[in-house]
Length: 151
Image (tube, rainbow, N blue to C red; front, side, top):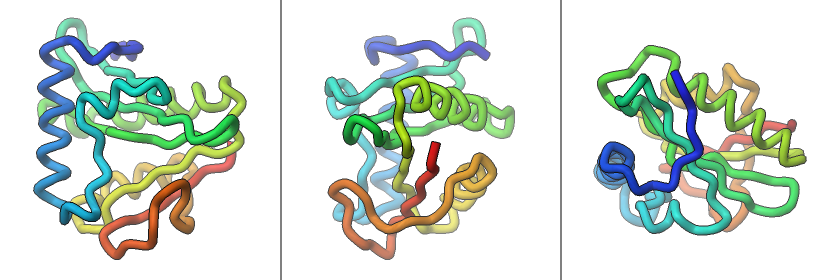
């Protein structure tokens, strides 16, 4: 499993990000959908990584810088061919370490509250995230769960 800083130009990366965006759109009402599309992930405040097994994409994820000491996890996705292989855990550990290296004191995230998001919530809890109030520009929403981790 190799984690690479990614420029979002490769066909496999574009396909996985598109799959993620469509899946999030299908699971969340428009006003509660916070997934970023390809253009959104290319903004300067976003750092994007892809996870590879040789020439096959396994997953992806990003950090959005919210301020000098606060980051947000964005666009975590594991390819359906690589579910339950530890891809998301390994990538999340990588992003936590990167956040610490950057000097962040807090890393936060927003995810869905529906049953389909429970495995992700359990993973976040396992790695030390806990539920919190909305942060940044988010507002209270029954379709969203907010989590944070002090670093």
